[in-house]
Image (cartoon, rainbow, N blue to C red; front, side):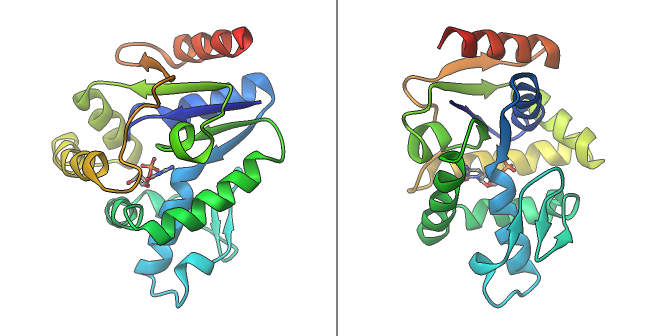
Length: 198
Ligand code: DC
């Protein structure tokens, strides 16, 4: 079974997807971390960023180095958004994601999982939250100023929503879940219940 969790940055995708995977005994796939790793490899001048070895697990690794924290830096977010707009990058990472997902039960997180990577996913959830709440959560996560995060987020949102390849959009058959003002436990229980109905 595949549960696809899409939605904009800061909607709570990672926290919720991880918790849903744990609750159901599924494997969690963070597709955004893959784009972030390619971006970090580029920023570091890696000769072949798309060919760099990415490790997805408890910790995210790049060429064997733990980059779980490094890939969350603002400049990596910025570059990841640019990298994710390139067709050759999307093609390569989508192929890797499809291969992984085919190997078992997954909760896969990312903006195009339910639309492009796995349109046949049994359950598609589009998580949302108000822009202010999303910026606040990201600011707390990375220890930055919420106003600054909100400004950067607005620019990234616009680019992600209007890019030519896989723009950010909910799959037509996705269930929209607004996490604004709801606890993680409430949201997770809601999604686990939805999964049980499929
Ligand atoms: O979800 P995130 O912030 O970690 O994603 C990092 C960047 O990669 C962000 O700009 C969106 C992009 N992305 C994407 O285009 N498709 C995905 N499946 C996952 C992330």
